[in-house]
Image 1 (cartoon, helix red, strand yellow):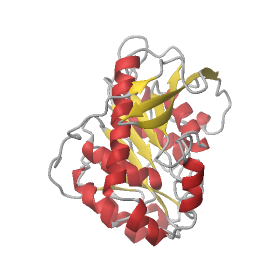
Image 2 (cartoon, helix red, strand yellow):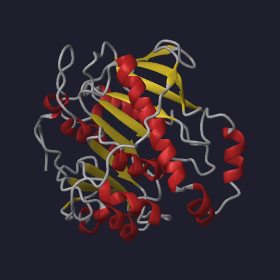
Image 3 (cartoon, helix red, strand yellow):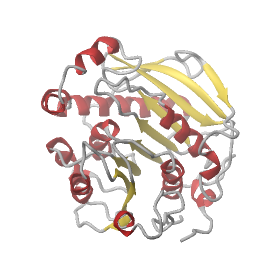
Image 4 (cartoon, one colour):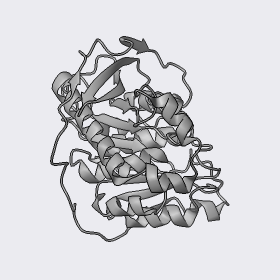
Length: 332
């Protein structure tokens, strides 16, 4: 399995003389113990539509020439994607999702869970552009991607009204009453139900599972990664050392790539790095870009894909191993 090398700053948007920014692209060496918990005691029992009978059925995307794909990394390929929509029922909740798979992908295809942000009154949903572009980049390495709507977002029942309500809240209100342990663990069970469904109906997950999510995707992602032992690597970021995150961070021990906007108006560099330092993983990196919250991150998409390709397990059958596809010369 090849190492993801943070010294490759070709796509980082950092000049050779910009030392103040480059120093944030670094390997973390925080100390920590092993996993402090296991998966949720009660696993969801999803009742789902058939794989070909999702909300809008199955479609095929041909991403040839799509933005960002040519920079997906050494060895990455441009491939067509099968896109399937589905609805699950998890503990009585409707959980809408989308699965993207490389055309012709077999059962031993690695899987990345993609958690969207924008749940704080800004109409975030499972099919935002960054997630679609990430799915296309990951397909170039032979991996599948799945996204589900957060509670109160996208195609969840009542989401329009809930988003309108959230727009009346302040950040302090949201931290106090919206992003609670009860809600993030409910979302973790929705993800676990999704994993169970994809495993039983599609045969996905046995060859490696990763999680990607920034901002609100990290708010829900840190508890998920902490509680779900099937997740082997994660890309997180644009979040800080608030009490909810610090409560789950000590359980995050898998390989981790943490993304930071250096000029983030919501999460300062120090706050972001305080959360990064709270993760006890011995295999973790910070990937930093200039800009405000969520700005200028298009060049990060191939870096995220390459990180997952280097960390997820090898494939068998018709697809080539993700790790093998990621191998290639790193340019300093």
